[in-house]
Image (cartoon, rainbow, N blue to C red; front, top):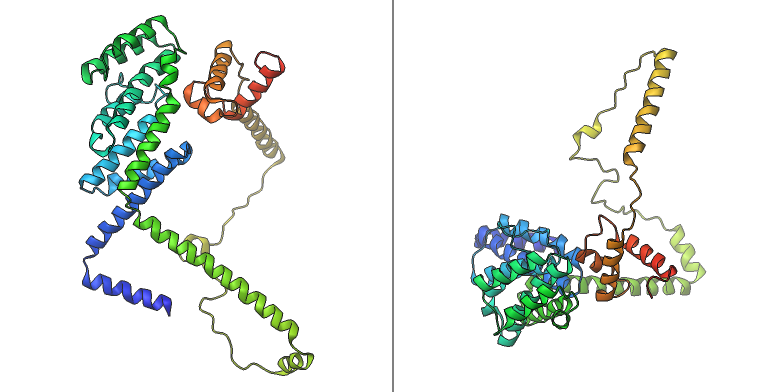
Length: 368
């Protein structure tokens, strides 16, 4: 009955309302849900989930172009978050100009999001953090010339938020002080935390979470139904134990003449795979012993070549890689291997490899 009602209501909507208008609402709700998911992944430091959802959000924005101030703001916010997320990866390019690094591109977008920030001090703090970290990342990577270029770019395009700000940063770059207190106070982790607080304020003022609320109700109702089913099963089991032996015998002797109607056949056929109904046809011919030995030897040679190609030479840990590892642990802490991988180029190594190398260094008393 419930399914029939939903079908009838859907047909009523089709007749009374333009389906294109309904589709636009669904598109907006879907994009809003993806927007909230991306903000949530960013706030919870779930960067892998962020990248996965980002590809879906980008595809839907390209396939479903929508207009509106709020929609444009959300697209710019996600673009800003993506650039901050890849802020320490200097080889990632978001602009046509290869000299514009991710955090520099984030600063360009952030200047257009000033109207979305309720607190002027918060907008200024993020502006300063983007500037300092754009320079600090280059210094950490040993790219001093790039750090000087970043300062010139900010001076020409945005200017400096405070007097003598550029002079102070320029002095730090010339001295090549990677762990200068100025960089420490305006660290990358502080940038992430400040952006997260901005997202919380924006979502509080623009809570377009209709699809999220609807999905939450469905989950809650399904959970409550599971609880009712469990209660019914317990009651039925208790009632069965209280039944008398005579009642059970009567039920066993009673013949049920009513058959249960099946809505779907027991044997399901693959309707969308017509090729699966065809029988395989195998041609067999006689093979001589010499030909059989030739084929066998050829297969063994191919297998050997394949194994040789798949094997990789063991990668050695260089002093520079050990230095990156020590710096990463010092900044993020032991166990934050995925975050450390984002900061430095470890030549294809995984978080597990970083953990194993750290154990080796500890056993050798090279780190504490």
